[in-house]
Image (cartoon, rainbow, N blue to C red; front, top):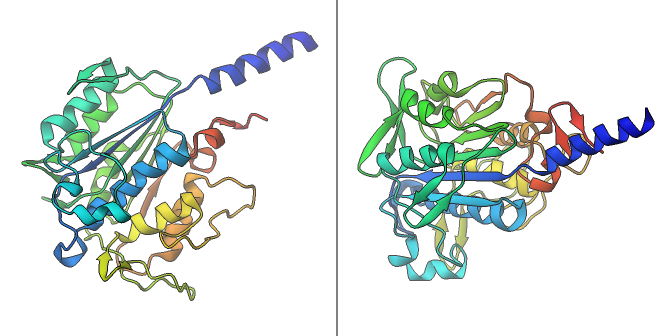
Length: 305
């Protein structure tokens, strides 16, 4: 009996550790470093998210769909000194490419010379949509991509075809809460920066609780903007600000930053009049992580070891 238990435990651990982690980052609005009204936040937060997922999070692959497909260095050479180290853009963020990347993740295949794997029931998908958005009637919403739009039901249909163990979807667009009812299920954690009836906000440099970290950075006289949700959520999962100051986002002090903890930290720091949204119908947020090694120590029932 003891041997059988050990075999079963080994099988559970092996299954958990065989899973792959993939991410899709979408930002359809082309900006410049000096874009008005904080719009360069769409580049800044997308760039730093991909950088974190690959360099610290340990993701197997991350595909960045951005505007017309050119990274920002093609128009802003001095982004090299902070927000650019390598070509992080994979594809343009057109409606067709957004549909294709999710289609390829469901079937496997080639896209623009890259091999896209077919995801399976052991894998984890993270989607970060950092973009303008709008709504039509009630809670029907859409995101503005490069050369077109995509509504909530279409985006959900493309993502729903992917076979995966769990998925984390974070959106910073206006009216992004309108996507919640289309995307939420028991294997999904959904986070948005606004309800279906609200604008989303750029970071306002006004974090509560006496936080002295200036949200929008000034480097060599240039302002690098962030979205309110993007700034705090990325700080939470990295446990440090963009200015490299430590933050305490580990609510239960276990040394791991779960998606739930990252959301709670962001929500506590939100000083705008937009209402952050959170959904985890399967209650998986407290044991799901954007750090692969942390996530692999958990399954849907708790810590493996």
